[in-house]
Length: 110
Image (cartoon, rainbow, N blue to C red; front, side, top):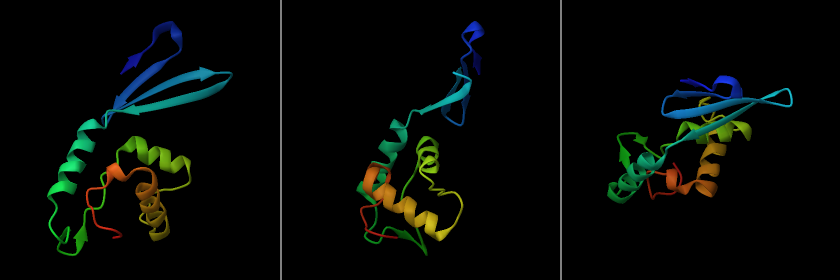
């Protein structure tokens, strides 16, 4: 954790994410960043080496989503952590449309 002295900027590193907090015009601004390159490489390996079914028992590993993207989805009103089927369907559509590199499978649907 770094507190930026007199600048009013604070950095907090947690869970492989960096959050920058600052005060602008009386509002707290939070900027989140995360190095997702290792996750993207892992996802590609999983996509390229999946079995023909892509399933393990009843389960399917569909995507690995970094927290920085989870936060972006929440800003769009999509809470993929809720366990709600409608929210998960919205998250899947968003991943398929805008973040296909987060998928760990080449299969369609889940």
